[in-house]
Image 1 (spheres, rainbow, N blue to C red):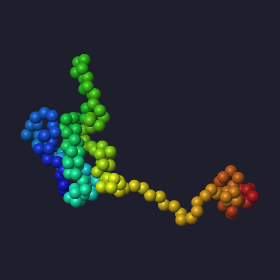
Image 2 (tube, one colour):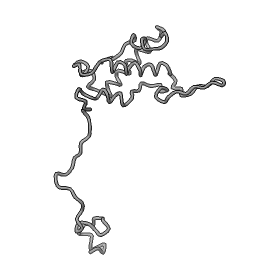
Image 3 (tube, rainbow, N blue to C red):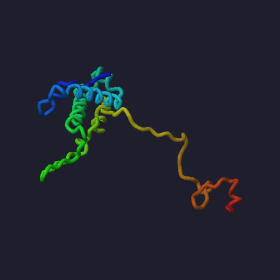
Length: 154
């Protein structure tokens, strides 16, 4: 399994000195973040190996996800002490490995800018149009021919 970031990457991005005792937890969070990102974008390891995706992009996403959990392990959204209070943004307050859908979408794009994913429609291969007046009842509901005499219609 590919791991997109390392302990040194997280340590370099953290704004305070990070204690060495935190390394096992950070390594486990990096492993979990990399696995989740690979589950969201299964082609990512192959595309990194092929050179179509910059490895710093998923690495940075994993570092951000791990630091969110490290900074706020209990998922607190508000803190208050005396007259002072602090509120955190909903995405910053998450205490789980989470990736922004827009960032994941940026990993899904190929070199040509196409998402490579999408939807398609399946239809009957025949001309489509509104129901003819003879095919429906006056109010617009279809009544099978066998039941029209039973229900008093026609």
